[in-house]
Structure formats: C-alpha cells, structure tokens
Length: 227
Image (cartoon, rainbow, N blue to C red; front, top):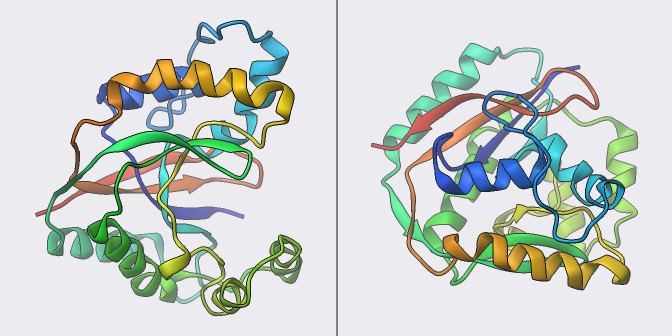
C-alpha cells in the first residue's frame, strides 16, 4: 500500500542534495541511481550496508513520518493542504553539523531552531487527519524500541513517537553502525560534508514524498515553496 511522508529536503539542484545523493547512491527527486562514490577505504559491500536503509527514504529530515492515507481523503486533498500550509510559512535559516543519534550518523542542527520545531509540530497536527491508523504490528514494533512514557503516548496519539518536544532534526546518512565502521564513517562524512556545515542554510519549502509499495524507495512528488 502507498505511503506518503512530509519531509524537508533541499532543492534538487542544491550542492548539498547532490553530495548526499552521491553518498547514498540515489536521487530522491528523480528516483535515479547515482554512481557509487569514492568511499575512502570502504569496500563496496561495507558501503552498501552503511547506506542501504537511508537510501530507501532519500535525503531528508522528517516533519510528518510516513503514513497511509485515510479512506475519506485523497492525495489531491493532501497536496492542497500542503500548499495552504506552505503559503503561511516564511523562510528561515539554520546551520548544520555532522552528528550522531545512537549509532547513526546524520546532519543535525548546529543550534536549536524554534522555527523548525514549530514547523514539524504544525505538520504533525495539521496532517494527522490524512493519516490512517497504523497496523497493530507497526505499533508493537515501535513499542519494542524502549520508548519513554511521553514517546509511548505520542505513538498512540500521532502514530509516531518522536514528535513535539521529542522531535530532533536529522538528515540520516547511515544505518546503525558497529564500532568497526563508526569512526571510519564519521571521518569520511565529516570531510565530505564539511563544505555544507557551519554556513547558513535557507529553509524555504517542504516536500511530499511517496512510497508506492512496501520496501520501495521514497520519491519526491512535489515541493511546496514558502511565501
């Protein structure tokens, strides 16, 4: 069954998008495979294992986690509401750095952004009417992730545990890494993404991503520019 997600992603022609697509081996805007990058000592098999999970989702930061459409709404309804939300938003700037969440490496914010936090919360609230209830097995799988009491409550209310004050901006670059590859990957990605860290990045749009079937890669369907 199709799923949609509301993500932040830089524009398709942004140098950051091109660098991340090359690292992941896939362009989420076109769906095209990108030739494998210089992997700085990783074998092809190691690199595939490192990027296999984030490659499916495409380079992005989650605002509204993947969801199936509720029966009483349409994709057109969803796009119209996204357009309406985007018209209310004003562009803002953030800066990035390479960081880690548990054993994942990702681009994270150098400094907290109340604008991004509010944008993510608005997307969670405003688009929940479009979300079908997740299957019981999905809820159970997420419950096994040692959620806090607040995260468990958000899971039941919003279908995803990492929302509101539990939300953290991150643009995932790796799968969960073991100690044998974590430091090497961090060194390589620090150098690869250094040109994009520390400088202002303009946030002026949000994107609708679609996954056509379970296991299929997510692809950008439309970008919604801010007023």
